[in-house]
Length: 114
Length: 112
Image 1 (cartoon, rainbow over the protein chains, first blue to last red):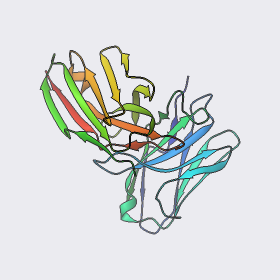
Image 2 (cartoon, one colour):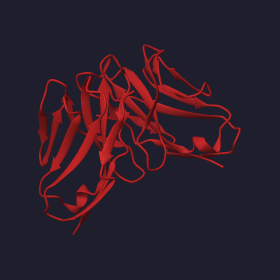
Image 3 (spheres, chains in turn purple, yellow):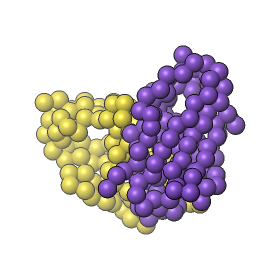
């Protein structure tokens, strides 16, 4: 049973560029959340997608946007990259609201902005 | 605004010891609390999920307790092993919220 799959695993971008990160949820899950984890910090919630709609958003600027596809996979897009966007980006999936069984996380994408 | 604190930030103990990791949160109106393990540069592995109606959960050598009224949770690790070395994160979920609010983690080192 495949867990949460994220791609790519590592990425290096230049300031001002745009980046797209991808996530395939665990089999049977229909909800995808994205988190940003800076070095030495706990993950910070970016947003959550359910039924192809953004259901909740954290305190992140509009440069961060997302999408969910009919097969429940999701993309995170970041425009006009800043050095401070360098972080580990984590995708988490759940069935529905995730209240009963919590969230399953992927291995993350390490983004470095130079 | 919910805030989650984990103390200590780092802990080093010899192999075989029993140990306790602490997590505190400021708003007791939580739906559940989840403990995760994170190896360096890797994603999060869920260890235990405690619903707000529960007092504790156990999985193998791990036991997590929850005291909502005092805003505290503990993760007890019995008979620690070098393979337990990792960062341990706790996260709480509020009623009606979709997001998890994380602590900064406790970096645990088990010395052989």
